[in-house]
Image (cartoon, rainbow, N blue to C red; front, top):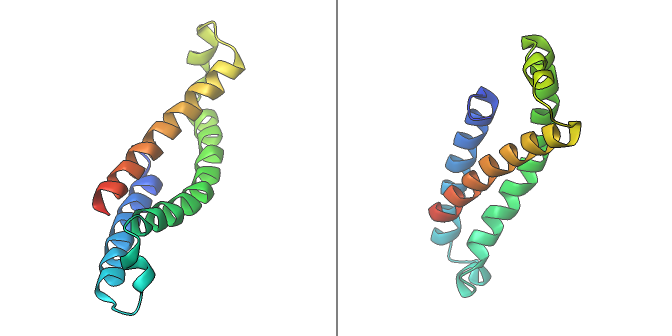
Amino acid sequence: LLRSWFFRIFAIIAMIFLFFFNMGTIIINGNWDVKAISSVIPYINLLILNTVQAIIAIFLASDFLKRDKKLDTTDVIYIRSMSNGEYVAGKTIGNLVVFMILNLIILTEA
């Protein structure tokens, strides 16, 4: 996932967009509710980011299956004794870890 250009471009655009979004909400004087509750800015950041991440995850999941067939990496999986559930769980946990790291980076930015 970290080697995917699609994910890299998404992560960079998300960090830049949310940085300017944060600066815009801090500078604007009309939004009293954003300034009154200090946890609103990180909450909105993660709300926007996770909504887009859900859409991105669908495309990345379909890309994994295509890439496995194209590169013929399934032979390596067949040599090891693992079930389909373990294979899917490993892929899912790997994606979740990468998205969690991106969420932590965005939270430290906010």
